[in-house]
Length: 216
Image (tube, rainbow, N blue to C red; front, side, top):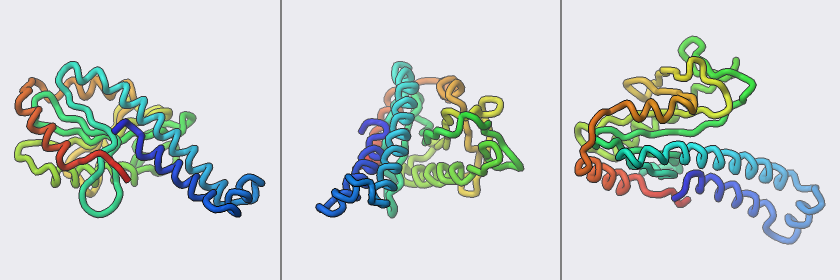
């Protein structure tokens, strides 16, 4: 599954659904369908989101040369339709990274305000809490003793104050890192140290088994 593929398909399907049937199609053609306009705006947003997920995927690609396993657009098991933008397995086979791509307003700075991640004055901490929940569910699904899961967000567009923020979320016992693009690959490349191809391969197979490509 390519990065951003499910988001792009979902937006396109909403756009098609708003035009199914002769009357809906005609009203959309005449510019008289509010539902078609909303679907078009949604499709445009999801297409933009998919582009930034693809950009993140290109940034991550060089890590594979040093032993990282990089997966994209993975479904969380269980109820709901949540998907993981990117999942990485460390070269030493002891860590899994759950990474969410965001594209926030470039005219405003992303910072911590009273412990909450904000873009300018707008609170975006719910998105930190979401990736923390995803990481907790992924860790439970993977279920391999000794494996640490790291929840991360990479923010495109908006400048992240200091390049990196350490946020907290109720669903996660540890930091949720919010990174600017320039800090993403260097942060991952530094830790954890060491390579164990056999262990990393086993862990990657387990991750692929329980976090299947997103198809819905």
